[in-house]
Image (cartoon, rainbow, N blue to C red; front, side):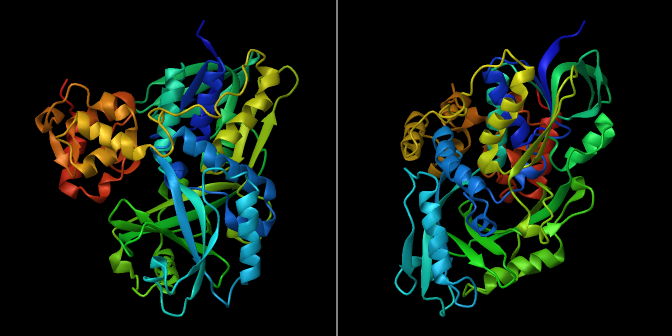
Length: 498
């Protein structure tokens, strides 16, 4: 008889991998399958912020905002290599939200979450502060506050790595084709990329399929959806760097939406996001010309430099599977998570995950396991708060020291290369470079500062299979490699020398 796992998880996004890590750390046996790459959909298409959600205060989502504000500093401590503080500048626009309302919101933002590390709000005179230089001349005052940046897809991978170290069986490129309750357990059928099928048995099933959560429930499990989801598309554009300082902007628009302009990958600016209801297949989501124009116009209304579609060097779009709370506008739909447990008397439980956001993924995992605990009595206690992710075992303010130490041990590394390696791998960068004494030891060169040694590490340790996995999810080096270089990398990975 095949092994019976405690939990089988469908979906390798941040929620699925976060639950897997937490469960494995509590002594449970876990199986996770993902139909494509880890973070292959929504979890790699965010605005890449760990934030309380300032605008959610307008919709009275105080519990969500408070939880998210607390989690900002928890995540900073867990992964200081892939997460760091970022200051946001909100220019005051007299025709939109009044200054008193913004001050009130920022006061709540500063105090709801028990802030300890991040500095508080301050008012800027844009005529004197460097943040005013890129802005059009009629903006005199701004509010500056703290949130954080996170490398979203790496956050997912690091959770998966930690889960795997703790015993989780993780299968990428493996689609769940169906699941049925049989003799008190779930029998889950999975299909690998080569078409081979296998049945996995588990005491509990977690549906963390993201935009496919309802489809998996109806087509894979054969049940009616436990709740309605509202699929909302969020799109982003990347353009050459628009300003020299390291702060981000949050711009208010006349339609009630906000748009961020964020320093990105040293030489670029990330602009997003949109909020549009989406009815099509999430596997084929892409930005529209209308969205591109909207984002360009939104930031051009604030900056001296006009941003036009021909400046765009990269775009990405994702579908957020939000819980349908009946909001009239996509931007007003709740970002809170909703967990629906289906556990008939004597039957194996099914937990469906609706909504959620990257900032609160760890709390979502704790809540999910609290619901499953009565059905899995051997489960241990919560443990993830304060436990670092792989490579994150150094002080929150210790990034520069890590870079200096890596360069001292490997003086052949350029400063920018060392910084990128520490940003991606933290203390694990030492392991990646073990035994290398010069550039030749890094192996074949693929472009930018990417070498064979790093690609092999990503294939062996982080489930990378294709060039897209390396260039767009494990890194953003796709912005720097040519099409020909990316194709050469893909060929090398398919035919990697043994």
